Length: 311
Image 1 (cartoon, rainbow, N blue to C red):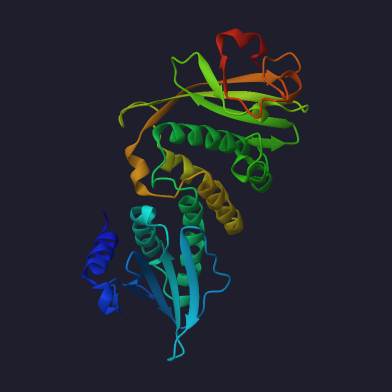
Image 2 (tube, rainbow, N blue to C red):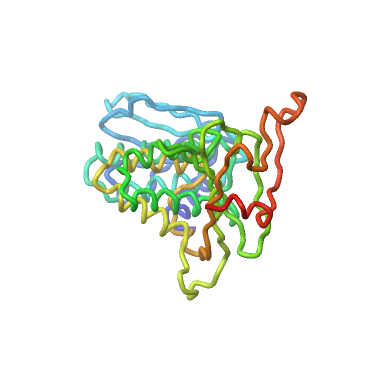
């Protein structure tokens, strides 16, 4: 628990809902931060600023609003309406304060607040825990490693990022002019990979299945990486295009990743990578070879048996 989160919990615990009112947080920031209860069970964090917040988005979990006060200032509030997400909401509030604390003006601070809020909104609406599971971290490391390799091979960074379409709901992870690329992560000793839907490998266009061998390791292990470092490796390649960085972090939020130092505590090593050509003869389930009554299916592919499709 960082200092901001501790301060938030302390202040909310100090408020008697029945007496109403709010308490200001004792945090150094260009914006004023207050906590209150919108109802007995609904925590709310309120920013007081001289400028309004435009185009605020509410969701199933958070009700956002911007109202002008009698003194001419604006109250920008974020109210939790799903009590089951209380811990994540407090983490979100703390993280947003931390993320925007170094800005010197209200305008730049509020811009960062709203940008970070948009990322967290995706996380909350999908009811994910704050940190991705170990398997999810490995899967994202694999996808980001492929994205980084694509950029390193010379593809324009904007085109490379635009082709990462999995977070946008596409059937395959990446789609480029040379075809589609489905990325999987599995352990060094695993003999299978899981295909989570029929559509993942069902395409008439040329494509490939790429399998990264990724395992947990000790921090001192040769070649040890973390999801946090991989994310920032990609950010370093987008640094000259701020608009691309924002697009990248929103894609990350779509898959449940919010940039947090805690990810530095989980170390992994990539020991191998295998490419398999997915063509007409590749063993896979498609809509054309299963009964129409089957709505969806998850299946496993035996890796040793597809060696002849290796590229």
